[in-house]
Every structure is written in C-alpha cells, then in structure tokens.
Length: 92
Image (spheres, rainbow, N blue to C red):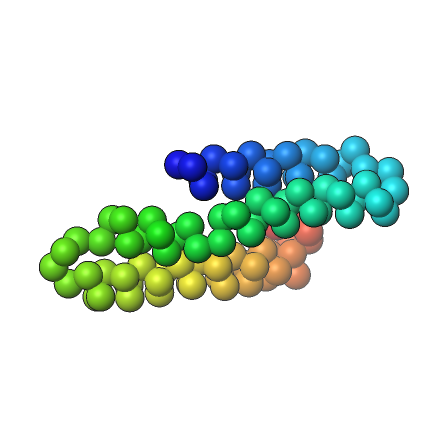
C-alpha cells in the first residue's frame, strides 16, 4: 500500500497534466512526474506475487506469476498496435 498508492497518484497526476501542457517544458515536467511514479512502482508486481505465494511450491507459483506478468506487459502494446493498424488509433 505504501508504494502502490503513491505510484498510482503520481502516474494519474502525470496523465492528467499532459492535456493541459502548452510547451515542451511543461510536457517534460508532466512526464518526469510519471517517470517518478513508474520508478516507485518498479517491482511492485513481483512483490505482490511474493506476498501471495504459498509456502508449498513457491518457485512454481512465482514462475507462473512472472510468465503472466510478462505476457501482459508484452501483449498489451501488441494488442493496441494491432487494433490501431486494423481499425485506427481512436478504436485502439
């Protein structure tokens, strides 16, 4: 909670700032806010997996956890780019 909440707040704040930027410096500041939030949350997915792993067969569980996390991280951009290519960016 102590990491997830500040991460979500900083990422959300950065995303809300992007539409109201009017110069390169303002856009850079918004992306820096998002980068700090992303840096704080780095590793939170694996930490959640370690916290939920059962004592018995912990390595198998964490292997599956990592597999699905990696599929999601690589599959999301592929899905969006595929939808953008087929139906346009607004649809994606």
